[in-house]
Length: 256
Image (cartoon, rainbow, N blue to C red; front, side, top):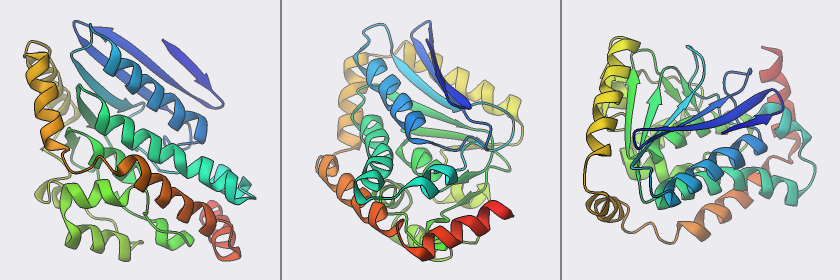
């Protein structure tokens, strides 16, 4: 299935029990609202598909994995309701990832910013290549990593999350992310990364589906309140993005 999105796409293909979901956007795989909803829809569908045993989530291209929120859409937000709808897209996606009864492997072939770090953190198993550096840049544009924060903190701990959130201009390299558990594996080449993903996906496709579902539920225990929490966090970002500080900061970023 291929869903065309303005300047991008979300597509899903199943082969031998493995559902591969790919998103693409020409602006470093940034995430407009329609893209967020499209990915969440495909993950929800994969979770309900009896023939799907495991999910691989990836982005297109050879460079950035995900640049986070779409700056064009952030600048277009004019009301609190519009802000809630946009950031609610990140809440929806993370919640679909955690509630999907199938394990989700995330393939990270390049840098992760903002919401991209949130996707990596919401993965059940993230496999990356060297050069897949990470940054939570939200504070530098006048908001904060509120929606992705619970997922990132759950994965790497409060201290590491705090350092990312506070020093919003600082890149942390992929080895830093691996040592703190954001990445389960780090490979020197894309070939090595893809071979490992294929091996693990094939292994899981032949594992007991019920056992995997119960194991995933156990791993995500204590996050049941996120259905409400993440949308409350989305409301915070939706309000802050209306400030003159945020609009000016985003314009400066776009000019770089």
